[in-house]
Image 1 (cartoon, rainbow, N blue to C red):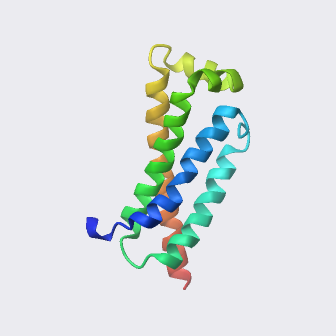
Image 2: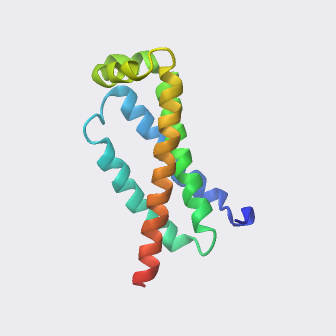
Length: 132
């Protein structure tokens, strides 16, 4: 893994999605459709990276995915009271898991979801390269 292959411009362009998803989640707009929005954005990002990156695809995919997950979770944690008002069922389930550290669970879940998203982006680019 060579960190010289990190394309900061592309990472900054694509990582803002996590902030938008965090805002949508806090406002309660994406309750039922969130997994589909993540998948759709991963597909679009995969095409974008396929066209614009020649090397360092894995590291860039992982950084983008982790950024999505962390940014989304951070926005939710920062506005947790509003998130609780707009997503009461999810927060109640979250409090059943860990009533003492729900914000920590959100950050950990965000990082896991981000890692998964990064792998999905990488796998989609790998498939696109094989189909070429």
